[in-house]
Image 1: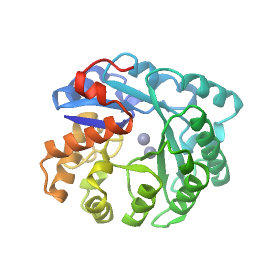
Image 2: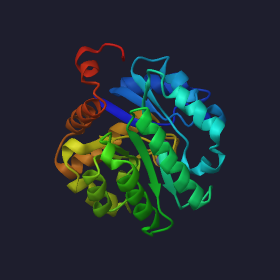
Image 3: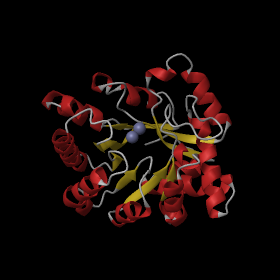
Image 4: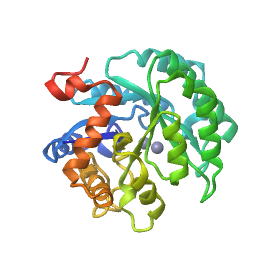
Length: 274
Ligand SMILES: [Zn+2]
Ligand SMILES: [Zn+2]
């Protein structure tokens, strides 16, 4: 059993064959999927929720990606606050900082990140963090972890550091701030030694797995469109590192996911969500 804790299944890349993609995930043992509610733009914020409402094994998030931070006006915030009340929404995200692409100015990204932490706290939802520094720099990590420390950590709701690409010291800090660390397909890439070093040290009970599909397909699917079924490859790589089978990594990370989101009763009884 596997949980894909971060998929962009509502995106246009799955427009033509979404049903088959979901069927392949189920056949591969993926029993729960979180689809990220950003849609292709803030204009389609509801897309992830609508998809999750169609399947009892799927959940959604709500939020504005740092790329689109400059589009986050009052109307959008009001809309998100309403959508956050829908039963299938289990987290606020993905939010954070992306200094690699700088699609929105950094000061705007920071302001919108902090504002979203505030509304997430009101909605009592954990947050899903996207953090990407410029090049090999530390800039986004420093700002991101500092802002979480100042504006979020005390509330105790925690969150997920999604698609972890940093070094162990960043993971260590995020763990101290109450976060789960989620590994994606890039842990399988030959050059990703830094991610594997972190993956060796993150406590097993704080680890999650995800695809971030359609991006970052793991080896041996690298370069193709990613899909939730491929999360098993990420589990396999983590298993190699931690001397576990891919099934054991699946069981462990699924258990972590259900426990973090207090969905244990779903895992045990297979009853529909909330
Ligand atoms: Zn991301
Ligand atoms: Zn994502």
